[in-house]
Image (tube, rainbow, N blue to C red):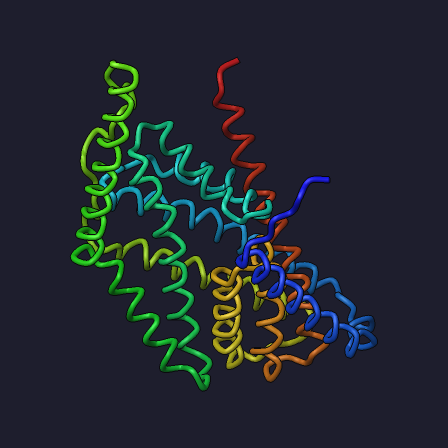
Length: 320
């Protein structure tokens, strides 16, 4: 029988995933009778459709923002190409490993002739910008006991993306990569007595300016996702305007933890458990359970529609 080797990181991932699912199962068990009594009326279905549209627009928008990130790395691309590439690769985040959507964007960027380093940095900067945006929106509404730690984390992330901090680090990494490549080439040449044919990156790349425009764009992305979450809540019960900001704030923190905590692909389980813990004083338990369940369904459906639209558009453009 083949042996199965589990690394500590795998144990951590499954422990987080299992803990989140256990928490959700307990919450559903306690409030199932109330959840079963919830009914969606005609106007509610309309609000769910609006939530789906808002979420789809959010994904299209963040694909456009990814193009801005590439531009700040001196790799300008057409906005429509960036959006289509983002949409058609985004659905791959649900595959085991939770990295295949990033890999797909790197491969697509290299096919356009971009340096590997610039393509890789673009997909690493994107979640950092999203995390900073979610922290900003989260800190606006809900004051928690660890507010100072979250504010400090935001400052560190924002400072780390400054060109005066990031570009020197990138320069050192390029030098280390160059030394490693020379060593490998020398070993190959001595063994084969022939020059290496591995192509090198055409020109140095770096962050041209502070990614302020992409940061603002990602704030818009997270805000749109939050508005979609509020629209789902409105489909189930009236929500006072004063509750909108706390709901978006709690959503932003929950979405952030689903993004950064190693768990199930797409943050499944982590987001739901965090949202229930943070927003329990904003919505009734049965309503909140229904909202997070509908949010997951609508979010996945929007990503699938976005991917289908991107592939269909690419198929139309492909010559027969």
